[in-house]
Amino acid sequence: MTGRLAFVESPVQLLNVLEWAHARGRGTTPAAAAAPAPSPGSPAPSGQGAPSPGSPAPSGQVVPSPESPDPSGQGGPLSAPGAGEAPAPVTGGPEGSAADDLRIVVLSPTDPMSRGQLRRMAQLARDEGFAVHWQEARAGRGALVRTLRELGGPLRAAGRVIVGDPFSRYVQLLLTLFGPRHVTVVDDGTATMEFAAQLAGGERLVRWHRKGDLGPRELVLAPVTSLARRRLAPGPGRSVEIFTSLPVQAPPGTEVTENTYAWTRERFGPPALTGGADLVGTSLVETGVIDADHYLRVVGQLARTHGATRYFAHRRETPEKLHRVAVETGLQVVRPDLPLELIARRGPIGATIVSFPSTVVHTLPLALAGTGVKVAVCEIAPEWLKATASPRAQGFLAGVAGTAAGADRLTPRSGSAVDRLEFG
Image (cartoon, rainbow, N blue to C red; front, side, top):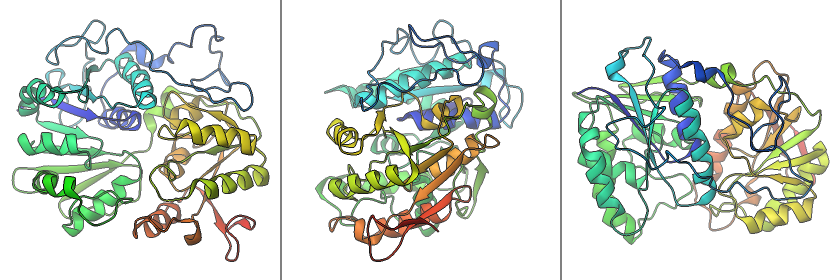
């Protein structure tokens, strides 16, 4: 079994696959040193402060990130690179040979924001010399069977499989059918922390914001999840690596490799700073953790306290909620078309970035190291949570905020949900 095969379903997963390959010493093509081409009509990059994807639009406007055409996105069989996708030589690492190169499979999601960001990230990966296969894994009836048929052979032949979301039902099904000898899990947000804890404790794999009770769908898929968990655990004939920027305890027998965002820092920036503050949005409303009205009040308070002018939206935030953010807080809403780590590194970016507990309070201090940008995390007070939120939500979010060593803490003091936010 030879070769390395990566399955990604989000832009951040694809970014972290590139970081993993860079950390393994994979060589790059000459095109790798060049920034992505600017959008039509935008000025050419000229050093610091060059326009970046997701750059600001007029104040208060919700900036769309439509799925842009990608001529090579659907093209070609998985077994061969498309035009302009010839892999560069591998220059080191335990699997370092040209024949052992990495292929990236995008299991395309359905929502337009994720698809648009993935198109841009896929092009960055191609610019680095990687072969990227775009798989319409959720495109209506028959997509699952077609995907399994197309990916079965390459998956059986892969010596190492890299996955970005061990909680994904699609990934779990693939691992159930074809168990790899070597597995690497890269970050797809803070879920990596929960995955490592559940793996160490021998627990079933459940996302942190989901309630513990098994519904009808979970009961049907329980055998798949159970077998996939075993395939994601180290054992005889199987090694497991977690490649992460988050503070995790290595489960027994598992290798944890630190992601320092070295590829991002080498390829982009340093950014020009605006001198003001930027807020980072979250999907805590969409996942049922915080009430929308309460969230809007807190966002408005943070904006006034820190003099923020821009709100970088999470790709899962709904247009309706973002419209309210723009109208009720006066913030300029920006929908980035690349992961925020790349947007911030290219700049311009605020001298202070304020976020709720999420992956970026761990990743942005790494990506922006040496730039002078300060990252602050606003902790979630228990009274902010909806009554229907998962019982695990408060502890998990507190852990995300409390372990963010590179971020300042912004603590809501007891007695008020909004009015007394202070640095802790």
